[in-house]
Length: 101
Image (tube, rainbow, N blue to C red; front, side, top):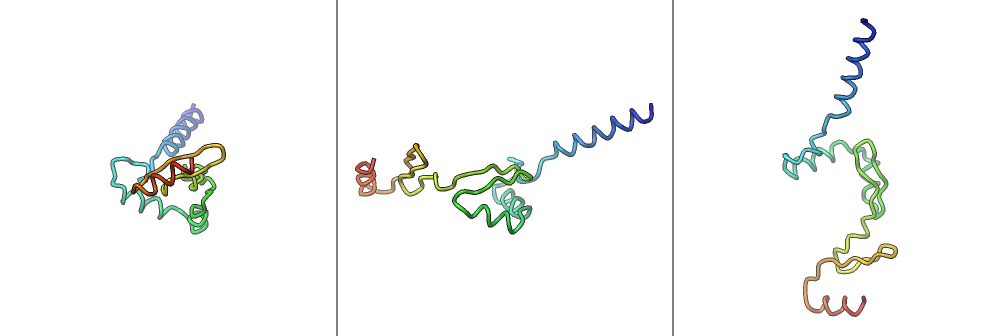
């Protein structure tokens, strides 16, 4: 009976630790607080990986693989067979982008 109780207690503690949320995952905190917490948890190597346009996943922090080149911030972006249209800040860029599509 003692072994069974000890086993149940160990499982409960393990599950509680898995369910624990990091501060950067807490939407009640400000963006600045969350960003500082996440950056403090990244290793130097992980920070370097995230600076590439195609970043690998960082599973230990729940960061998924991402292709940053597809953001379309400057107008148009082509990611494989998908074309994304982003912000157009003036009429000249708007006209140029229509000719590109």
